[in-house]
Image (cartoon, rainbow, N blue to C red; front, top):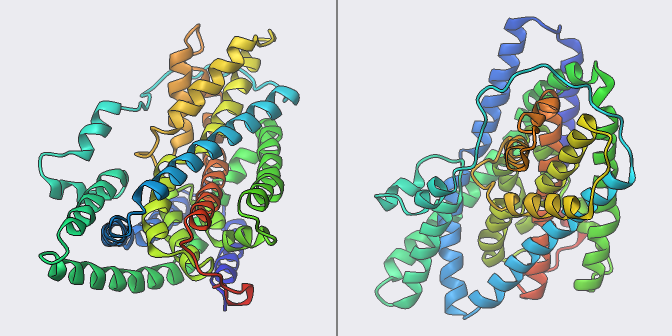
Length: 409
Protein backbone atom coordinates (compact mmCIF):
# COMPACT_ATOMS: atom_id res chain seq x y z
CA UNK A 1 0.00 0.00 0.00
CA UNK A 2 1.32 3.44 -0.94
CA UNK A 3 2.40 5.68 1.91
CA UNK A 4 -0.01 8.50 1.06
CA UNK A 5 -2.95 6.09 1.20
CA UNK A 6 -1.89 5.04 4.71
CA UNK A 7 -1.85 8.70 5.73
CA UNK A 8 -5.28 9.31 4.22
CA UNK A 9 -6.67 6.29 6.08
CA UNK A 10 -5.05 7.40 9.34
CA UNK A 11 -6.45 10.92 8.92
CA UNK A 12 -9.97 9.66 8.15
CA UNK A 13 -9.89 7.39 11.22
CA UNK A 14 -8.76 10.34 13.32
CA UNK A 15 -11.57 12.55 12.02
CA UNK A 16 -14.13 9.82 12.77
CA UNK A 17 -12.68 9.34 16.25
CA UNK A 18 -12.96 13.08 16.92
CA UNK A 19 -16.69 12.99 16.21
CA UNK A 20 -17.22 9.86 18.28
CA UNK A 21 -15.31 11.06 21.34
CA UNK A 22 -17.27 13.33 23.71
CA UNK A 23 -16.45 17.04 23.70
CA UNK A 24 -15.36 19.19 26.63
CA UNK A 25 -14.33 16.33 28.89
CA UNK A 26 -10.90 17.24 30.31
CA UNK A 27 -9.68 13.65 30.60
CA UNK A 28 -10.51 12.90 26.94
CA UNK A 29 -9.07 16.19 25.66
CA UNK A 30 -5.89 15.65 27.66
CA UNK A 31 -5.46 12.07 26.42
CA UNK A 32 -5.90 13.01 22.75
CA UNK A 33 -3.56 16.02 23.13
CA UNK A 34 -0.93 13.75 24.72
CA UNK A 35 -1.19 11.17 21.93
CA UNK A 36 -0.98 13.91 19.28
CA UNK A 37 2.13 15.44 20.85
CA UNK A 38 3.68 11.98 21.22
CA UNK A 39 3.07 11.25 17.53
CA UNK A 40 4.69 14.55 16.49
CA UNK A 41 7.71 13.88 18.70
CA UNK A 42 7.90 10.35 17.33
CA UNK A 43 7.93 11.67 13.78
CA UNK A 44 10.64 14.23 14.54
CA UNK A 45 12.84 11.67 16.28
CA UNK A 46 14.77 10.63 13.17
CA UNK A 47 14.99 14.07 11.56
CA UNK A 48 18.07 15.59 13.23
CA UNK A 49 20.55 12.73 12.55
CA UNK A 50 19.22 12.45 8.98
CA UNK A 51 19.73 16.18 8.35
CA UNK A 52 23.18 16.17 9.92
CA UNK A 53 24.71 13.23 8.06
CA UNK A 54 22.77 13.86 4.84
CA UNK A 55 23.77 17.52 4.64
CA UNK A 56 27.43 16.76 5.42
CA UNK A 57 27.58 14.20 2.62
CA UNK A 58 25.72 16.49 0.22
CA UNK A 59 28.11 19.39 0.79
CA UNK A 60 31.05 17.10 0.25
CA UNK A 61 29.66 16.00 -3.11
CA UNK A 62 28.62 19.50 -4.15
CA UNK A 63 32.03 20.96 -3.37
CA UNK A 64 33.82 18.06 -5.02
CA UNK A 65 31.80 18.53 -8.20
CA UNK A 66 32.03 22.34 -7.96
CA UNK A 67 28.23 22.64 -7.97
CA UNK A 68 27.78 24.61 -4.75
CA UNK A 69 27.34 28.02 -6.40
CA UNK A 70 24.83 26.91 -9.02
CA UNK A 71 22.77 24.91 -6.52
CA UNK A 72 22.84 27.74 -3.97
CA UNK A 73 21.79 30.39 -6.50
CA UNK A 74 18.84 28.32 -7.72
CA UNK A 75 17.85 27.43 -4.16
CA UNK A 76 17.94 30.97 -2.80
CA UNK A 77 16.38 32.43 -5.94
CA UNK A 78 13.49 29.98 -5.82
CA UNK A 79 12.94 30.60 -2.11
CA UNK A 80 12.69 34.35 -2.69
CA UNK A 81 10.56 33.91 -5.81
CA UNK A 82 8.04 31.57 -4.20
CA UNK A 83 7.70 33.87 -1.19
CA UNK A 84 7.08 36.88 -3.45
CA UNK A 85 4.40 35.03 -5.40
CA UNK A 86 2.54 33.88 -2.29
CA UNK A 87 2.58 37.27 -0.55
CA UNK A 88 1.36 39.01 -3.71
CA UNK A 89 -1.44 36.44 -4.11
CA UNK A 90 -2.50 36.84 -0.49
CA UNK A 91 -2.65 40.62 -0.73
CA UNK A 92 -4.50 40.57 -4.05
CA UNK A 93 -7.21 38.23 -2.79
CA UNK A 94 -7.78 40.03 0.52
CA UNK A 95 -7.84 43.45 -1.17
CA UNK A 96 -10.25 42.32 -3.86
CA UNK A 97 -12.59 40.33 -1.61
CA UNK A 98 -14.25 42.13 1.30
CA UNK A 99 -14.43 39.64 4.16
CA UNK A 100 -16.87 40.25 7.03
CA UNK A 101 -15.42 42.17 9.94
CA UNK A 102 -14.26 40.24 13.00
CA UNK A 103 -16.02 41.36 16.21
CA UNK A 104 -13.73 43.38 18.47
CA UNK A 105 -12.64 41.43 21.54
CA UNK A 106 -12.15 42.81 25.02
CA UNK A 107 -9.29 40.44 25.69
CA UNK A 108 -6.18 42.03 27.12
CA UNK A 109 -2.60 41.55 26.01
CA UNK A 110 -0.86 38.70 27.76
CA UNK A 111 2.61 37.36 27.03
CA UNK A 112 3.49 38.25 23.44
CA UNK A 113 5.79 35.97 21.40
CA UNK A 114 8.63 37.75 19.65
CA UNK A 115 11.39 37.00 17.18
CA UNK A 116 14.79 37.37 18.82
CA UNK A 117 17.09 37.76 15.82
CA UNK A 118 20.17 38.16 17.99
CA UNK A 119 19.51 34.87 19.77
CA UNK A 120 18.86 33.12 16.46
CA UNK A 121 22.21 34.29 15.09
CA UNK A 122 24.07 33.28 18.24
CA UNK A 123 22.44 29.84 18.11
CA UNK A 124 24.20 29.21 14.80
CA UNK A 125 27.52 29.71 16.56
CA UNK A 126 27.04 28.38 20.11
CA UNK A 127 29.87 28.21 22.62
CA UNK A 128 30.38 24.57 21.62
CA UNK A 129 29.65 23.24 18.15
CA UNK A 130 28.10 20.14 19.73
CA UNK A 131 25.41 22.38 21.20
CA UNK A 132 24.13 22.81 17.63
CA UNK A 133 22.73 19.28 17.84
CA UNK A 134 20.65 20.05 20.93
CA UNK A 135 16.95 20.56 20.40
CA UNK A 136 14.99 19.99 17.23
CA UNK A 137 13.18 23.27 16.64
CA UNK A 138 15.65 25.49 14.77
CA UNK A 139 17.37 23.44 12.06
CA UNK A 140 19.79 26.08 10.76
CA UNK A 141 22.53 25.48 13.41
CA UNK A 142 22.49 21.75 12.62
CA UNK A 143 22.50 22.42 8.90
CA UNK A 144 25.39 24.87 9.20
CA UNK A 145 27.53 22.49 11.29
CA UNK A 146 26.90 19.63 8.86
CA UNK A 147 27.65 21.82 5.84
CA UNK A 148 30.89 22.98 7.41
CA UNK A 149 31.90 19.39 8.14
CA UNK A 150 31.14 18.27 4.57
CA UNK A 151 32.97 21.23 3.08
CA UNK A 152 36.08 20.62 5.19
CA UNK A 153 36.14 16.95 4.21
CA UNK A 154 36.07 17.96 0.53
CA UNK A 155 39.17 20.11 1.01
CA UNK A 156 41.33 17.07 1.83
CA UNK A 157 39.75 13.90 0.50
CA UNK A 158 42.67 11.63 1.40
CA UNK A 159 42.75 12.41 5.12
CA UNK A 160 38.97 12.52 5.34
CA UNK A 161 38.26 9.11 3.76
CA UNK A 162 37.61 7.33 7.10
CA UNK A 163 35.30 10.14 8.21
CA UNK A 164 33.47 10.16 4.87
CA UNK A 165 32.97 6.41 5.06
CA UNK A 166 31.43 6.85 8.51
CA UNK A 167 29.23 9.77 7.38
CA UNK A 168 27.97 7.94 4.29
CA UNK A 169 27.24 4.79 6.27
CA UNK A 170 25.44 6.79 8.97
CA UNK A 171 23.40 8.63 6.31
CA UNK A 172 22.19 5.34 4.80
CA UNK A 173 21.29 4.00 8.24
CA UNK A 174 19.39 7.19 9.03
CA UNK A 175 17.52 6.94 5.72
CA UNK A 176 16.40 3.43 6.65
CA UNK A 177 15.45 4.63 10.12
CA UNK A 178 13.51 7.60 8.79
CA UNK A 179 11.59 5.33 6.39
CA UNK A 180 10.47 3.33 9.44
CA UNK A 181 9.30 6.47 11.25
CA UNK A 182 7.50 7.80 8.18
CA UNK A 183 5.62 4.51 7.78
CA UNK A 184 4.50 4.40 11.41
CA UNK A 185 3.69 8.08 11.56
CA UNK A 186 0.64 7.20 9.46
CA UNK A 187 -0.73 5.53 12.61
CA UNK A 188 0.13 8.62 14.60
CA UNK A 189 -1.94 10.66 12.16
CA UNK A 190 -5.02 9.17 13.84
CA UNK A 191 -4.22 11.07 17.04
CA UNK A 192 -2.89 14.18 15.25
CA UNK A 193 -5.95 14.59 13.04
CA UNK A 194 -8.34 13.74 15.91
CA UNK A 195 -6.82 16.46 18.07
CA UNK A 196 -6.95 18.95 15.17
CA UNK A 197 -10.65 18.24 14.55
CA UNK A 198 -11.46 18.54 18.25
CA UNK A 199 -9.88 22.00 18.23
CA UNK A 200 -11.49 22.93 14.91
CA UNK A 201 -14.99 21.97 16.04
CA UNK A 202 -14.95 24.60 18.76
CA UNK A 203 -13.66 27.17 16.28
CA UNK A 204 -16.30 26.37 13.66
CA UNK A 205 -19.07 26.60 16.25
CA UNK A 206 -18.60 30.35 15.83
CA UNK A 207 -18.98 31.06 12.10
CA UNK A 208 -17.01 34.31 12.35
CA UNK A 209 -13.83 32.89 10.83
CA UNK A 210 -15.37 30.66 8.15
CA UNK A 211 -15.09 33.24 5.30
CA UNK A 212 -11.40 33.72 6.11
CA UNK A 213 -10.78 29.97 6.08
CA UNK A 214 -12.63 29.65 2.78
CA UNK A 215 -10.50 32.38 1.21
CA UNK A 216 -7.31 30.59 2.30
CA UNK A 217 -8.66 27.33 0.90
CA UNK A 218 -9.34 29.00 -2.45
CA UNK A 219 -5.85 30.50 -2.43
CA UNK A 220 -4.35 27.07 -1.78
CA UNK A 221 -6.30 25.54 -4.66
CA UNK A 222 -5.11 28.34 -6.96
CA UNK A 223 -1.47 27.82 -5.92
CA UNK A 224 -1.53 24.01 -6.01
CA UNK A 225 -3.72 23.64 -9.06
CA UNK A 226 -2.73 26.58 -11.27
CA UNK A 227 0.25 28.73 -10.25
CA UNK A 228 2.83 26.10 -9.28
CA UNK A 229 1.98 23.67 -12.13
CA UNK A 230 2.23 26.57 -14.59
CA UNK A 231 5.63 27.56 -13.18
CA UNK A 232 6.85 23.97 -13.49
CA UNK A 233 5.57 23.85 -17.06
CA UNK A 234 7.38 27.07 -18.01
CA UNK A 235 10.61 26.74 -16.00
CA UNK A 236 11.17 22.99 -16.14
CA UNK A 237 9.45 22.29 -19.47
CA UNK A 238 7.56 19.62 -17.55
CA UNK A 239 4.65 18.10 -19.44
CA UNK A 240 3.30 16.45 -16.29
CA UNK A 241 3.58 19.13 -13.59
CA UNK A 242 0.82 17.63 -11.43
CA UNK A 243 3.01 14.67 -10.53
CA UNK A 244 4.78 16.97 -8.06
CA UNK A 245 1.44 17.70 -6.40
CA UNK A 246 0.73 13.96 -6.33
CA UNK A 247 4.07 13.33 -4.61
CA UNK A 248 3.18 16.05 -2.08
CA UNK A 249 -0.08 14.52 -0.84
CA UNK A 250 1.44 12.81 2.18
CA UNK A 251 3.45 15.86 3.23
CA UNK A 252 0.52 18.26 2.75
CA UNK A 253 -1.68 16.08 4.96
CA UNK A 254 1.04 15.91 7.61
CA UNK A 255 1.70 19.65 7.49
CA UNK A 256 -1.96 20.66 7.57
CA UNK A 257 -3.02 18.57 10.55
CA UNK A 258 0.19 18.96 12.57
CA UNK A 259 1.01 22.54 11.57
CA UNK A 260 4.66 21.49 11.94
CA UNK A 261 7.14 22.26 9.15
CA UNK A 262 9.87 20.09 10.70
CA UNK A 263 7.62 17.05 10.87
CA UNK A 264 6.56 17.47 7.25
CA UNK A 265 10.22 17.83 6.24
CA UNK A 266 10.76 14.19 7.20
CA UNK A 267 7.94 12.99 4.93
CA UNK A 268 9.04 15.41 2.22
CA UNK A 269 12.57 14.01 2.15
CA UNK A 270 11.38 10.47 1.67
CA UNK A 271 8.93 11.33 -1.09
CA UNK A 272 11.34 13.59 -2.97
CA UNK A 273 13.92 10.80 -3.00
CA UNK A 274 11.73 7.77 -3.67
CA UNK A 275 8.98 9.37 -5.76
CA UNK A 276 10.57 12.34 -7.55
CA UNK A 277 14.05 10.82 -7.71
CA UNK A 278 15.99 13.67 -6.11
CA UNK A 279 19.70 13.11 -5.65
CA UNK A 280 21.01 13.50 -2.11
CA UNK A 281 22.63 16.83 -3.04
CA UNK A 282 19.19 18.36 -3.51
CA UNK A 283 17.37 16.33 -0.89
CA UNK A 284 19.70 17.27 1.97
CA UNK A 285 20.91 20.69 0.85
CA UNK A 286 18.07 22.51 -0.92
CA UNK A 287 15.09 20.91 0.82
CA UNK A 288 16.17 21.77 4.40
CA UNK A 289 16.84 25.36 3.32
CA UNK A 290 13.34 25.54 1.87
CA UNK A 291 11.92 24.21 5.12
CA UNK A 292 13.82 26.83 7.15
CA UNK A 293 13.46 29.91 4.94
CA UNK A 294 10.68 29.35 2.37
CA UNK A 295 7.81 30.41 4.59
CA UNK A 296 5.88 32.21 1.89
CA UNK A 297 2.69 30.42 2.94
CA UNK A 298 3.07 31.84 6.42
CA UNK A 299 3.65 35.29 4.89
CA UNK A 300 0.51 34.90 2.76
CA UNK A 301 -1.64 33.97 5.76
CA UNK A 302 -0.06 36.73 7.87
CA UNK A 303 -0.75 39.45 5.29
CA UNK A 304 -4.35 38.27 4.82
CA UNK A 305 -4.91 38.19 8.58
CA UNK A 306 -3.38 41.61 9.16
CA UNK A 307 -5.55 43.26 6.51
CA UNK A 308 -8.57 41.53 8.06
CA UNK A 309 -7.61 42.95 11.46
CA UNK A 310 -7.25 46.50 10.08
CA UNK A 311 -10.63 46.29 8.36
CA UNK A 312 -12.24 44.96 11.53
CA UNK A 313 -11.06 47.96 13.52
CA UNK A 314 -11.70 50.60 10.88
CA UNK A 315 -13.77 51.05 7.73
CA UNK A 316 -11.14 53.34 6.22
CA UNK A 317 -9.47 52.18 3.02
CA UNK A 318 -5.80 51.47 2.38
CA UNK A 319 -3.32 53.72 0.73
CA UNK A 320 -0.77 52.42 -1.74
CA UNK A 321 1.91 52.97 0.92
CA UNK A 322 -0.01 50.79 3.40
CA UNK A 323 -0.18 47.93 0.92
CA UNK A 324 3.53 48.16 0.12
CA UNK A 325 4.33 48.28 3.85
CA UNK A 326 2.27 45.17 4.61
CA UNK A 327 3.86 43.37 1.66
CA UNK A 328 7.42 44.30 2.66
CA UNK A 329 7.07 43.49 6.36
CA UNK A 330 5.27 40.16 5.78
CA UNK A 331 7.89 39.22 3.21
CA UNK A 332 10.86 40.07 5.45
CA UNK A 333 9.46 38.52 8.64
CA UNK A 334 8.88 35.19 6.87
CA UNK A 335 12.63 34.60 6.57
CA UNK A 336 13.07 34.88 10.34
CA UNK A 337 10.57 32.16 11.25
CA UNK A 338 12.91 29.19 10.98
CA UNK A 339 12.93 28.83 14.76
CA UNK A 340 9.13 28.45 14.81
CA UNK A 341 8.23 25.22 12.99
CA UNK A 342 4.86 25.42 14.78
CA UNK A 343 2.80 28.57 15.33
CA UNK A 344 4.90 30.76 13.05
CA UNK A 345 1.81 32.51 11.71
CA UNK A 346 0.75 33.74 15.14
CA UNK A 347 4.29 34.90 15.94
CA UNK A 348 4.52 36.81 12.64
CA UNK A 349 1.11 38.37 13.23
CA UNK A 350 2.03 39.63 16.70
CA UNK A 351 5.28 41.09 15.35
CA UNK A 352 3.62 42.90 12.43
CA UNK A 353 0.93 44.33 14.74
CA UNK A 354 3.62 45.54 17.12
CA UNK A 355 5.64 47.17 14.34
CA UNK A 356 2.59 48.83 12.80
CA UNK A 357 1.53 50.40 16.12
CA UNK A 358 -1.15 53.12 15.88
CA UNK A 359 -3.26 51.33 18.49
CA UNK A 360 -3.19 47.97 16.69
CA UNK A 361 -0.56 46.37 18.95
CA UNK A 362 -3.18 43.96 20.34
CA UNK A 363 -4.95 43.43 17.02
CA UNK A 364 -3.69 39.86 16.74
CA UNK A 365 -6.03 38.94 19.63
CA UNK A 366 -8.96 39.07 17.19
CA UNK A 367 -7.65 36.01 15.37
CA UNK A 368 -6.04 34.15 18.25
CA UNK A 369 -9.00 31.71 18.59
CA UNK A 370 -8.51 30.70 14.94
CA UNK A 371 -4.74 30.23 15.24
CA UNK A 372 -4.67 26.39 14.90
CA UNK A 373 -6.44 26.45 11.55
CA UNK A 374 -4.54 29.48 10.28
CA UNK A 375 -1.26 27.73 11.09
CA UNK A 376 -2.51 24.62 9.30
CA UNK A 377 -3.07 26.51 6.07
CA UNK A 378 0.30 28.25 6.39
CA UNK A 379 2.09 24.91 6.90
CA UNK A 380 0.32 23.38 3.89
CA UNK A 381 1.40 26.29 1.67
CA UNK A 382 4.96 26.07 2.99
CA UNK A 383 5.39 22.33 2.46
CA UNK A 384 4.03 22.58 -1.08
CA UNK A 385 6.44 25.44 -1.79
CA UNK A 386 9.32 23.38 -0.39
CA UNK A 387 8.72 20.34 -2.56
CA UNK A 388 7.91 22.39 -5.69
CA UNK A 389 10.89 24.70 -5.24
CA UNK A 390 13.24 21.79 -4.59
CA UNK A 391 11.98 20.11 -7.73
CA UNK A 392 12.86 23.23 -9.74
CA UNK A 393 16.36 23.20 -8.22
CA UNK A 394 16.78 19.48 -8.95
CA UNK A 395 15.76 19.93 -12.58
CA UNK A 396 17.88 23.03 -13.16
CA UNK A 397 20.97 21.42 -11.59
CA UNK A 398 20.22 18.03 -13.20
CA UNK A 399 20.20 16.23 -9.89
CA UNK A 400 17.23 13.91 -10.20
CA UNK A 401 16.28 10.65 -11.86
CA UNK A 402 12.95 10.29 -13.58
CA UNK A 403 10.67 7.79 -11.83
CA UNK A 404 7.47 6.49 -13.36
CA UNK A 405 4.28 7.58 -11.63
CA UNK A 406 3.27 4.00 -10.86
CA UNK A 407 6.45 3.56 -8.78
CA UNK A 408 5.78 6.55 -6.51
CA UNK A 409 5.57 5.47 -2.89
